[in-house]
Length: 226
Image (tube, rainbow, N blue to C red; front, side):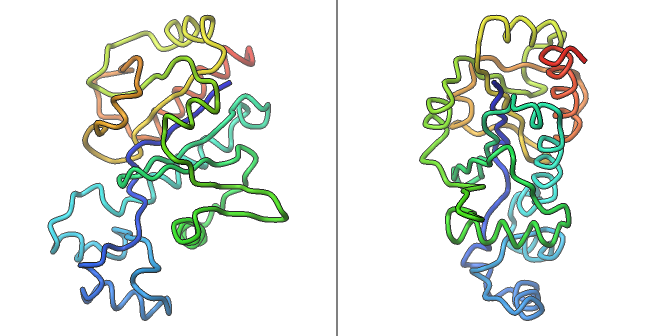
């Protein structure tokens, strides 16, 4: 079974110091919400992110949205080979997504869902928990009986992906794949502590979605013989 972890995702409510910024106040009025109820999104809050000198990765919720849809749309999901999909945020919050969850494909609906998640800690429908908050990543790995954790980064060891994954899968019943849900940079210390092997699939700075597509395609060839 596979656990996907989307690490250091810029999923956060707007920080308190930014509540009075003109761009934040304008967007809050448009959405008829309080600033503390809204997610920081660079598409609408770019000037606030710039004026407060925040990292360029902050507010890039679009990366997380595309990554989640990429995973959920796979045969790995429909065939029950993914035991958990995990969001790890820049604030070290951890959320597990049921692999049968149907996330909104429309970006604005996705934002609303994530705001509800950050406010209430879970998403439920028809007495089924779709997304729930976890204590930490170590708890997630333990609950899923993960015995090997793989991180993807240009700083990792260059490998031949299909050969490497086939070898890892042959030796481990449950593995975790960690991909950064950010545009630039590297994993933080919390993520590095749980990575057993840091690998690289190329010299170029690939996008999160591209890395996931490479990983998923390779896993499906190995596990589904496609």
